[in-house]
Image (cartoon, rainbow, N blue to C red; front, side, top):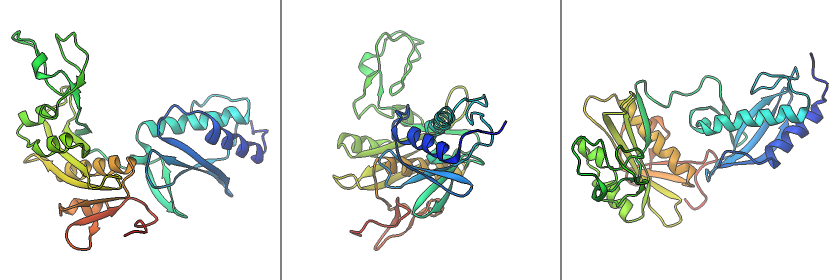
Length: 292
């Protein structure tokens, strides 16, 4: 059954849902929906990322929800389901894994054929800054407690913020140097800290970590301070760790990322030689900020 709504109705319904409806995803801010010959282009901001993002939305040929596959009775209902699908993709990392095309200064994201941001067999997440402090550990033998984790056995206590000296203890136990991120955390300069681990039921062993710090009080310049992988771990895990760190600081508002690390993997992510030493990546596709 062909749709009975005009393209003008469809455009207005999508614009209403994209710009004025409350979303369940923190970080999304709708900008506009414009008509193109074969589709509509929905533009939006994401977190504090300096870029404008966009997704193409095809005009419906049938009154079918693009999210559920069920029938819908109005253009507004169809548009609401378009937004529900977009919200789901954003919540699962569309800005990270979506295929990118630069168009008129915007980054157009495609959910088909996603980018492989996680190496096969590995997973990456933020290092937790909450858990059960060492002073609260029970003395009973056989308890399976570890600092810096959300879930503990035999513990009646809720996770609490850990002191910097205890964050990342599980990485230290596996032979990684955590002195730098702990110092940055104590100085309130830590921008992000990610860990990589083998993707299995135990979530271990941990195989690497990446750290970025803030170089300036306005938090416009981030420094990729450390990217480490354990011996024998594939280099693409290091690339993935760096990618996650860059994405984290970009979403936090960084306009540029600098580093003294000169690894080939960083060139794949867009880092270029800086004036002087090191590498630099400008997070905005429109180019470096005016002051540089």
